[in-house]
Image (cartoon, rainbow, N blue to C red; front, side, top):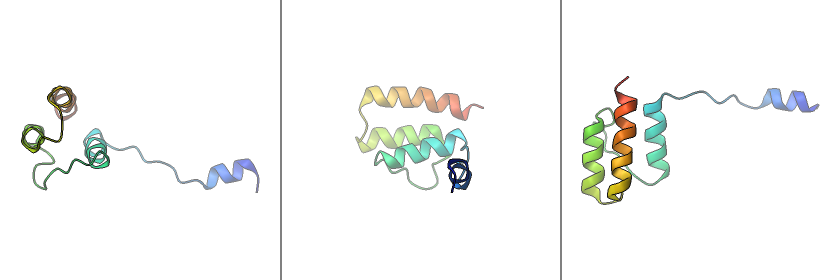
Length: 72
């Protein structure tokens, strides 16, 4: 099998929407977001603050990123 055939047989990565990508990233980091609040950035930030799993400076950064992503 040629190199080009092998490359052609590899699964294509599908692009994700930013919300799904953010949720997947949080899961990979061991941060669980309860069902029902996945689409509410303020509720997610509130949950992260209450859980104590994320330092305040990262929460601030996450809040800014999520506001940009969800405001589209």
